[in-house]
Length: 319
Image 1 (cartoon, helix red, strand yellow):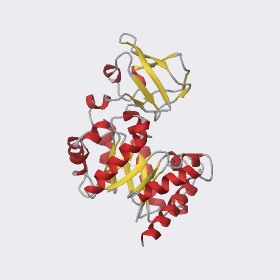
Image 2 (cartoon, helix red, strand yellow):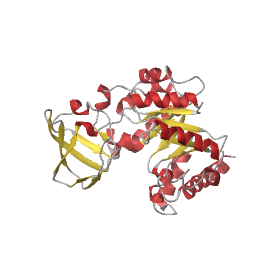
Image 3 (cartoon, one colour):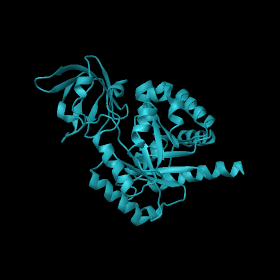
């Protein structure tokens, strides 16, 4: 049976109760990047109140640099400068990893800007924007290769692992894994019996894929973060390579990012979305992750129903 990872949030769980969408295929994902430890513990309790036998994934934020302490969205415009204080990221030493001219992708490559200057005295990073829009709080900031010089687990990751252990969750998702040593470090904290899903979203993880596969139960290809690392035009080839290697080692693969993006605001998907999803499922993928589509989208129930229908179609063909 193929699986669906459904991210809970203001839409699914709060507005739409899980009892309206529950299916044995479903794994309910908590995105550890959003909310305090108390907020996330409340999510766990609410999920189990609504569906007592639910399977839950704690998805760790990992060492992803994000905007922080941005009380009001920052207006950015192509060709214009803007600033972020050192205190306005979740990793205060972010500035020390940057050099003038570094390209930064923000919010899953929605925005692109370059580092113009770093003012140590004023504790400010100045950027030149190549995009127009609003940079909000808690949005990812990605610089290629930066993760090599950062700790694997941040403090919040360790606190979330403790929460997963306490509530005996089913899965823990490890973000921005670079090599098998990262997996082994996390295993020191994670209780035996909790299954590990290693996310493949860095070039280093692709290089070290075979060693990583030997240490985990599942992998998840995050096409969004991986695209900022390798370039969006390379994602199809990388996806196929990762899937082939995982299937060779008899590991199960989840895929994530923008499968039903249109359904965040519309009740039906586009035809290209349906074809992409169907073809992907036929490639041997074990499961699909829904992120914004279910967490904050307007039609989480319809999203999950659409995926389940496609999975039913494929599984009926296989009988």
